[in-house]
Length: 71
Image 1 (cartoon, rainbow, N blue to C red):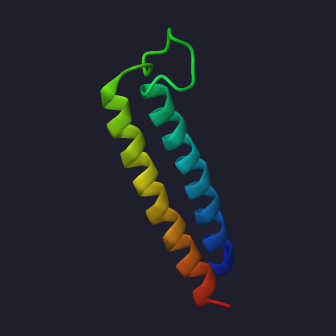
Image 2 (image 1 turned 90 degrees about the vertical axis):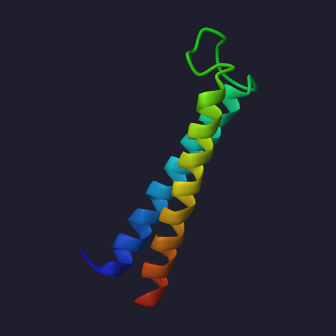
Image 3 (image 1 turned 135 degrees about the vertical axis):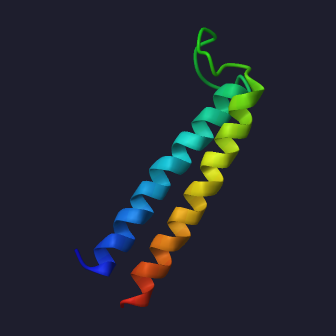
């Protein structure tokens, strides 16, 4: 696998993880999801969602740097 493809894969993984982090945060703040979910109105999942989103930004940034560095 060349570095350009690795960069694209990291960007895709980062986007998917970021989406999950935003959904977890929205559920924990009672914006989306069923009330029966263990994440619904759970402040711990607000923190988890922010952490996951932050890590996903780092993954996306890494992917972009790898992708651009081998153009």
